[in-house]
Length: 191
Image (cartoon, rainbow, N blue to C red; front, side, top):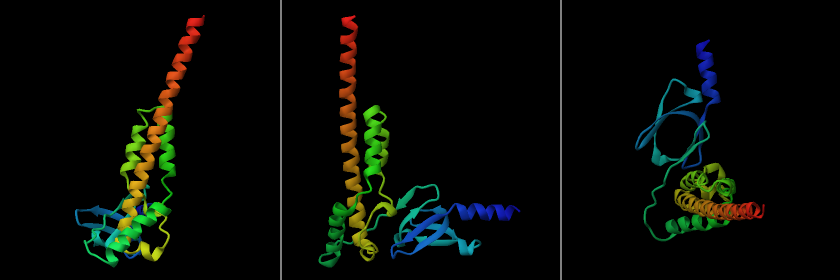
């Protein structure tokens, strides 16, 4: 009975590992070290697999968090740097999934400017999840240089939008509080 319950928990709580070549692995991550990760896949519960982080694009954990691995780009000329720059250009054009983070930060800072810092910092420092990147071309998205350019720029776009929304929300919130306070003072003095 215990084995059945444990295996049901494993099946329902899966991590999703995506390799640089685009292969998706349903697994349970057991350990993350400086250079490798160790996991168990569904088809081999008794076998632990250790893989280099440099071979991986991302891990989407069962709890909803994501870990995106930085891809080291060798400094070269020609096609390689062109793919990185194409990724940057495409991120500016196609990455649009920052809106939830930006709206949440705007609303939080509108009502409570100090508390709006929490979502602003949290949202601006996290790399967008692989699912939300919106890479327009799947074959280009598998290229490490293109992916590095796209994901790096997407993070910058997200951070800029989040902090802009924080500033707008906090500014409006403070102005509204000043107006309400002034109106309240006028009301009290007229009584």
